[in-house]
Length: 137
Image 1: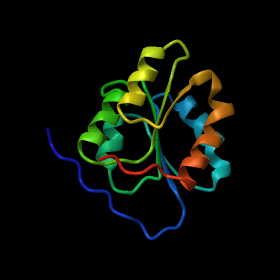
Image 2: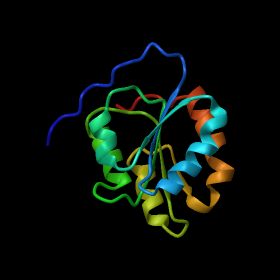
Image 3: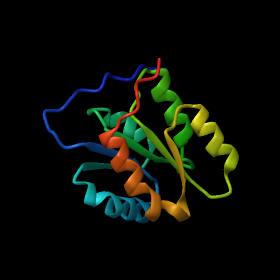
């Protein structure tokens, strides 16, 4: 397995949010929900495209659990194994309690059910950008 490049820090003072969602409509909806944060939002349609970009320091990563190819949970595991620790929010279906528990055990800061995105995502991301969790050891 190839190692991931170390993130490069940008001189911009705006937070950068990475959004990994395969469905273009869901990606657009999430982008619109996050727009009030006045952050740079980078969209990716797969975990692989996110990893290929790996050219910035993200203040927060939001990823769908059920992605084609590498899942959101696998992406989280790969980042943690490489020592890359942005706060990660996983998004999934409401009935996937086992996945939510696994995500939290693997180091996600939150698991948000798709039906509750409009209620929860904006507040949670805003908090994480202002209060990043401590790095994992």
